[in-house]
Length: 196
Image (cartoon, rainbow, N blue to C red):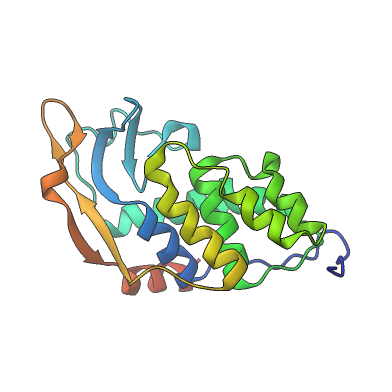
């Protein structure tokens, strides 16, 4: 169904709109915190698995919004965009499709083993649409997966230009759910992406 491009011809670029879409499914915490499975995390869901050192750097040391977003964009470029491009090598993606695939990879790290990717490449669109929704654990992720499915297959963006920000409760170091507030980040993202 799809005309395959020569290998290495994907020109998928990170746009402000894509970054906002991923951020709308995540949140920003400006200092180190423990996530739901007790992994030390910081910024936009960044752990030391990304190659960016979290402890002791950010424990009790909140950072600026700009730095949190700068590291987020760097991690996307270094760790996640290459994985998406490898999975879809030779298959052109729209901005919506690239954004959805990048969000899926950022959340699961499982794009290379997800059945829906091969089904889509084989032209089995309805099977792929169903298969992407098989990645639904924990249950809290179903809303995100539904948005990624709508973005990839229907071109429907879900972000409103804001991101949730949380502070950290101490001494537990878990995000404080009562501190949640929406913040606008588009101007900072645009500036950072323009200067990459």
